Amino acid sequence: MIFPVLEIESVVQVNDKTRLDATKSFVTPDEASISLVEIQPSAGDAFIDVTQNKYLDWQYSTDGAAITVVVRITTDGAPTTFSKTLTVKSVADDKLFSTDAELISYEPDLLNYVRAGRSSFLDVHRTSQQRILKVLDENGFWNKDKSTITLDEILTIDDFVDWSKFMTLRLIFEGLSNATDDIFHEKALRYKNMEAEARDRARFRIDTDKDGEQEEEEDISFRTIEFEKI
Image: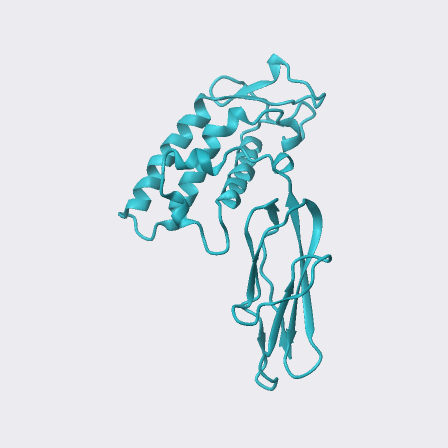
Protein backbone atom coordinates (compact mmCIF):
# COMPACT_ATOMS: atom_id res chain seq x y z
CA MET A 1 0.00 0.00 0.00
CA ILE A 2 0.99 3.61 -0.55
CA PHE A 3 0.78 6.00 2.38
CA PRO A 4 1.14 9.66 1.42
CA VAL A 5 2.02 11.84 4.41
CA LEU A 6 1.73 15.62 4.20
CA GLU A 7 2.91 18.02 6.90
CA ILE A 8 1.95 21.69 6.52
CA GLU A 9 1.35 24.72 8.69
CA SER A 10 -2.30 25.34 9.44
CA VAL A 11 -1.95 29.13 9.05
CA VAL A 12 0.54 31.16 7.03
CA GLN A 13 0.75 34.80 6.06
CA VAL A 14 0.67 36.10 2.49
CA ASN A 15 4.17 36.02 0.93
CA ASP A 16 5.66 34.13 3.87
CA LYS A 17 7.73 31.09 2.94
CA THR A 18 6.31 27.78 4.13
CA ARG A 19 7.24 24.13 3.57
CA LEU A 20 4.79 21.61 2.13
CA ASP A 21 6.47 18.45 3.39
CA ALA A 22 5.84 14.92 2.10
CA THR A 23 9.14 13.41 3.28
CA LYS A 24 7.43 10.97 5.65
CA SER A 25 5.41 9.33 2.87
CA PHE A 26 6.08 5.62 2.58
CA VAL A 27 5.02 2.30 1.06
CA THR A 28 4.64 -1.17 2.51
CA PRO A 29 7.30 -3.83 1.67
CA ASP A 30 5.02 -5.53 -0.84
CA GLU A 31 4.67 -2.32 -2.86
CA ALA A 32 6.98 -1.15 -5.63
CA SER A 33 9.32 1.71 -4.77
CA ILE A 34 8.09 5.26 -5.03
CA SER A 35 8.90 6.58 -8.50
CA LEU A 36 7.23 9.98 -8.38
CA VAL A 37 6.21 12.45 -5.67
CA GLU A 38 4.23 15.50 -6.68
CA ILE A 39 2.69 18.36 -4.71
CA GLN A 40 -0.08 20.71 -5.76
CA PRO A 41 0.10 23.87 -3.59
CA SER A 42 -3.52 24.86 -4.30
CA ALA A 43 -6.38 23.90 -6.57
CA GLY A 44 -5.35 26.51 -9.12
CA ASP A 45 -1.77 25.23 -9.40
CA ALA A 46 -0.25 22.39 -11.39
CA PHE A 47 1.34 19.42 -9.65
CA ILE A 48 5.08 19.96 -9.15
CA ASP A 49 7.59 17.10 -9.21
CA VAL A 50 9.36 16.96 -5.82
CA THR A 51 10.63 13.39 -6.05
CA GLN A 52 14.20 14.32 -5.17
CA ASN A 53 13.52 16.15 -1.89
CA LYS A 54 9.87 15.16 -1.29
CA TYR A 55 8.97 18.66 -0.15
CA LEU A 56 8.05 21.97 -1.74
CA ASP A 57 8.95 25.36 -0.32
CA TRP A 58 6.23 27.80 -1.32
CA GLN A 59 4.62 31.14 -0.63
CA TYR A 60 1.06 32.23 -1.37
CA SER A 61 0.46 35.59 -3.00
CA THR A 62 -3.20 35.95 -2.00
CA ASP A 63 -5.10 35.19 1.17
CA GLY A 64 -7.82 32.59 1.48
CA ALA A 65 -9.39 30.02 3.79
CA ALA A 66 -9.34 26.22 3.36
CA ILE A 67 -6.71 26.18 0.59
CA THR A 68 -6.22 22.56 -0.38
CA VAL A 69 -2.69 21.17 -0.68
CA VAL A 70 -2.38 17.77 -2.37
CA VAL A 71 0.46 15.26 -2.44
CA ARG A 72 0.39 12.58 -5.14
CA ILE A 73 2.52 9.44 -4.82
CA THR A 74 3.19 7.07 -7.72
CA THR A 75 4.86 3.64 -7.70
CA ASP A 76 4.20 1.28 -10.62
CA GLY A 77 0.46 1.78 -10.85
CA ALA A 78 -2.24 4.35 -10.32
CA PRO A 79 -1.08 7.22 -8.06
CA THR A 80 -2.43 7.75 -4.55
CA THR A 81 -3.30 11.22 -3.32
CA PHE A 82 -3.74 12.83 0.07
CA SER A 83 -4.74 16.39 0.92
CA LYS A 84 -4.79 18.89 3.77
CA THR A 85 -6.04 22.44 4.02
CA LEU A 86 -4.40 25.60 5.28
CA THR A 87 -5.43 29.21 5.74
CA VAL A 88 -3.48 32.08 4.20
CA LYS A 89 -4.00 35.39 6.01
CA SER A 90 -3.29 38.93 4.93
CA VAL A 91 -1.08 41.02 7.22
CA ALA A 92 -4.16 42.87 8.45
CA ASP A 93 -6.15 39.73 9.20
CA ASP A 94 -3.20 37.94 10.80
CA LYS A 95 -2.85 40.92 13.15
CA LEU A 96 0.39 39.72 14.70
CA PHE A 97 1.51 41.79 17.68
CA SER A 98 5.20 41.91 16.74
CA THR A 99 7.53 41.51 13.75
CA ASP A 100 10.97 40.13 12.97
CA ALA A 101 12.30 43.67 12.56
CA GLU A 102 11.58 44.34 16.23
CA LEU A 103 13.44 41.16 17.22
CA ILE A 104 16.50 41.94 15.12
CA SER A 105 17.02 45.20 16.98
CA TYR A 106 17.85 42.99 20.00
CA GLU A 107 19.41 40.04 18.17
CA PRO A 108 20.96 41.12 14.84
CA ASP A 109 21.88 37.54 13.81
CA LEU A 110 18.54 36.01 14.77
CA LEU A 111 17.38 35.17 11.24
CA ASN A 112 20.29 32.74 10.96
CA TYR A 113 18.25 30.45 13.21
CA VAL A 114 15.04 30.40 11.17
CA ARG A 115 14.05 26.76 10.76
CA ALA A 116 14.28 24.97 7.43
CA GLY A 117 11.46 25.74 5.05
CA ARG A 118 10.78 29.19 6.44
CA SER A 119 12.24 32.66 5.89
CA SER A 120 10.84 34.35 9.00
CA PHE A 121 9.70 33.81 12.57
CA LEU A 122 6.11 34.79 11.81
CA ASP A 123 5.00 31.35 12.99
CA VAL A 124 6.51 32.06 16.42
CA HIS A 125 4.96 35.55 16.52
CA ARG A 126 1.61 33.82 15.85
CA THR A 127 2.22 31.42 18.74
CA SER A 128 2.92 34.43 20.99
CA GLN A 129 -0.29 36.09 19.84
CA GLN A 130 -2.36 33.04 20.74
CA ARG A 131 -0.60 32.61 24.08
CA ILE A 132 -1.23 36.26 24.98
CA LEU A 133 -4.93 35.87 24.28
CA LYS A 134 -4.92 32.73 26.43
CA VAL A 135 -3.15 34.52 29.30
CA LEU A 136 -5.77 37.28 29.20
CA ASP A 137 -8.52 34.68 29.40
CA GLU A 138 -6.86 32.69 32.19
CA ASN A 139 -6.46 35.85 34.27
CA GLY A 140 -10.09 36.85 34.01
CA PHE A 141 -9.82 39.58 31.40
CA TRP A 142 -13.02 39.15 29.40
CA ASN A 143 -15.44 41.16 27.36
CA LYS A 144 -18.33 42.79 29.19
CA ASP A 145 -20.62 39.94 28.15
CA LYS A 146 -18.12 37.51 29.76
CA SER A 147 -16.97 36.15 26.40
CA THR A 148 -13.32 35.50 25.62
CA ILE A 149 -11.36 38.41 24.14
CA THR A 150 -10.48 37.77 20.50
CA LEU A 151 -8.48 39.67 17.90
CA ASP A 152 -11.70 41.41 16.83
CA GLU A 153 -11.80 43.31 20.14
CA ILE A 154 -8.18 44.49 19.91
CA LEU A 155 -8.41 47.74 17.98
CA THR A 156 -4.70 48.58 18.25
CA ILE A 157 -1.79 46.20 18.61
CA ASP A 158 0.63 48.87 19.86
CA ASP A 159 -0.02 47.99 23.51
CA PHE A 160 0.99 44.36 22.90
CA VAL A 161 4.20 44.89 20.94
CA ASP A 162 6.70 44.70 23.81
CA TRP A 163 4.99 41.75 25.50
CA SER A 164 4.84 39.88 22.20
CA LYS A 165 8.38 40.56 21.00
CA PHE A 166 9.98 39.46 24.28
CA MET A 167 7.75 36.38 24.44
CA THR A 168 8.72 35.54 20.86
CA LEU A 169 12.42 35.93 21.65
CA ARG A 170 11.99 33.69 24.69
CA LEU A 171 10.20 31.01 22.66
CA ILE A 172 12.86 31.09 19.94
CA PHE A 173 15.76 30.68 22.36
CA GLU A 174 13.93 28.03 24.38
CA GLY A 175 13.60 26.09 21.14
CA LEU A 176 17.29 26.50 20.36
CA SER A 177 18.51 25.60 23.85
CA ASN A 178 19.62 22.03 24.55
CA ALA A 179 21.19 22.51 27.99
CA THR A 180 20.45 24.56 31.09
CA ASP A 181 23.83 26.27 30.95
CA ASP A 182 24.11 27.16 27.26
CA ILE A 183 23.93 30.70 25.88
CA PHE A 184 20.47 30.14 24.39
CA HIS A 185 19.11 29.14 27.79
CA GLU A 186 20.58 32.29 29.30
CA LYS A 187 18.99 34.41 26.59
CA ALA A 188 15.64 32.69 27.09
CA LEU A 189 15.72 33.53 30.81
CA ARG A 190 16.69 37.13 30.10
CA TYR A 191 13.81 37.62 27.66
CA LYS A 192 11.41 35.83 30.01
CA ASN A 193 12.10 38.53 32.62
CA MET A 194 11.72 41.28 30.03
CA GLU A 195 8.48 39.68 28.87
CA ALA A 196 7.03 39.74 32.39
CA GLU A 197 8.05 43.37 32.87
CA ALA A 198 6.50 44.40 29.55
CA ARG A 199 3.26 42.59 30.37
CA ASP A 200 2.95 44.09 33.85
CA ARG A 201 3.67 47.71 32.93
CA ALA A 202 1.39 47.93 29.89
CA ARG A 203 -2.20 49.09 29.62
CA PHE A 204 -4.21 47.26 26.99
CA ARG A 205 -6.97 49.03 25.07
CA ILE A 206 -9.62 46.46 24.25
CA ASP A 207 -13.10 46.98 22.85
CA THR A 208 -14.78 44.96 25.61
CA ASP A 209 -18.30 46.12 24.73
CA LYS A 210 -17.74 45.22 21.04
CA ASP A 211 -19.10 48.50 19.70
CA GLY A 212 -16.11 49.14 17.45
CA GLU A 213 -14.90 52.12 19.49
CA GLN A 214 -12.34 52.48 22.23
CA GLU A 215 -13.49 54.07 25.47
CA GLU A 216 -11.17 55.04 28.31
CA GLU A 217 -12.86 52.68 30.76
CA GLU A 218 -12.03 49.77 28.48
CA ASP A 219 -8.32 49.94 29.31
CA ILE A 220 -7.10 46.91 31.27
CA SER A 221 -3.85 46.32 33.11
CA PHE A 222 -2.27 43.46 35.03
CA ARG A 223 -1.29 45.97 37.73
CA THR A 224 -4.27 48.18 38.33
CA ILE A 225 -7.51 46.69 37.01
CA GLU A 226 -9.77 44.84 39.41
CA PHE A 227 -11.40 42.11 37.38
CA GLU A 228 -14.41 39.99 38.18
CA LYS A 229 -14.42 36.20 38.12
CA ILE A 230 -17.44 34.33 36.83
